[in-house]
Structures are given as structure tokens and as C-alpha cells.
Image: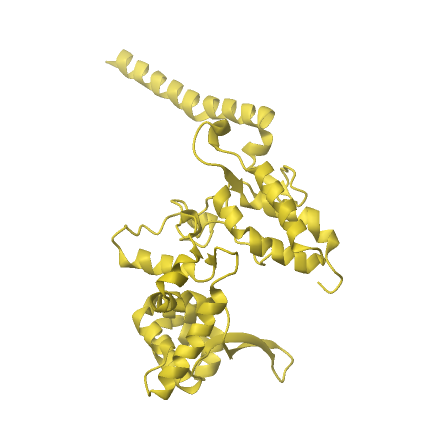
Length: 337
């Protein structure tokens, strides 16, 4: 009996040392010796070069991040707002109406016509004209109808602009942040009634104490209008006009399983090319056609399919291409930019 217990204990000790100490140490040694950059998180610096110093890193080529500015390519939508600490999917099934709502909301700001012009300005004009007509007819504002039909999006909007909404409602920000759904019910209808044919935007305002705060400012343009009013515009559009809209690659409106997918398909990158090239042309004062040609060449050079091209379609790493764009054009920006 003692002999069996001794043998089992030795086996337990041996397997713990082998599997929990020696094996991880061997893998750590191999990783640090042969694949140090990848073992440290595949970080890259502002020059696009691999780095193991977190202080110099601008991101990881394995994790997506949101970029601000029209001069940059955007990653796939994320159900977790590209938060690496909360990786996950939306878990919306194909039959879930919430999936359709989210996809429809994503289309307005990104869709364009086959000639390259964005549909956004037409959606904005449709909103202003239609709501003006509804006002003359004594009908409720489009904004109110949208807030009722899409309460989740309305609540999210209020939550994202809690301080400005609180100031407009003359309430404490904590009240709005604590119950944004209730604040949405109190905000949208009186705002829309007072400011027909406009959407609530925000702008910075200086307080008497010299501080900066955000206040509600009526707008008639912007991605909020394009997202919320796209479906109405689409339903009102003629079949001829719809046929002029260029189909969008699926990965521009569908989230990935992790919410952190660092790549987009080459088709999705090319779909974004016109507005990216246009913004860099504006910032540098150079011809858009030339900038577009240069960026397209960069995309084709950086695009690669998985497993050395043996599987899947060509992908572009969003962080890498944006770092390359900054390195190539940042120095050429006009002084006023």
C-alpha cells in the first residue's frame, strides 16, 4: 500500500514539474530566442517596425483598434468597441432583428454610389426635407419616431453625450448616466419639437470659469443622421437610384467573433480608399488621383492571404497600413493642418 502511494506521489510530482515548470520554460526560451517580437505581443512602433518596448508601441498587429480621422482606414465593426480586455461577439443570430438594426445603422455613413460619391449627403438632405414636410403637415418629428423605434440606439446616444444632455435637461450628469433610457424619453421629443429638421449634435463651449463643456447644438449633417435615416431614405429611393449604390463588402458591417480582428479584406480596404485618399490629398495639397494611386499600390503590396496565399482571400492589416500612411504623408501636411 505504501509503495503504491509513494509511486503515485512521485508520478504526480514528476508530471507537475514536467507540465507546469519545464514545458512552459522550454516554450518561453524558444519564444524569446527565436520569436521574441511575436512572443512579446507582435507590437509595432510609429515607424512600423517590430518593438518589444510597450512605451514605443503604437499597437499590436494582432489586435484591432479604432482610428479617428478620415485619413485612416477603419477596422471591422466591434461588438466590444475594440476593447482587448472584453473580447467577444454580439451573439446576434441571423434571425435577430437587433442584427439587422445594427447593420442598417452602419450602412448610412459608409455606402457610396458606383461613381465613388458617398450617399451620406443625400440621406442628410432627405432627412431635412422630409422632416420639414412633416412639420408643415403637423406630424411628429422623424427624430421622435426614430427614438421610439430604436430605443437601444437612442439610449446609447444619450449615454455617450450624457453631460450635454444633462445640461439641456437642466439635470445632474449622474442622473442621466444612471438612467440614460429615462433621460432619452425626456430629451428627444422636446428637443425635436423645438428644433425641427435638425439632429442633436454637440459642440464645446467655454464656461464663465474658463472651463470647457459640451452643449447640445442642432446640426443637419453628420454620421448620426446618416445612420438613423438611412433606412427611411432607402425605402423612399427609386429602384433606379438604388441600382446606383455600390454593394459594400460584408466585413465592413459585420463584427468578427472576437471583436478584435486586426485585418480587413482587400475589397473592404479598397472600398474605403476614395475617402482616405481624398483626405490625405486635402491635408497635403496634392492631387487626389496621385495619392489614390500611391495608396492603392501600398494596399496591394501589403495585402496577403492566410497561409502564404493557400487559403482565404487577401487581407490587409489595418494598423500596419495606417502607420505606413502616416509615415509617408504626415511630413507633407500643409502647415494649417
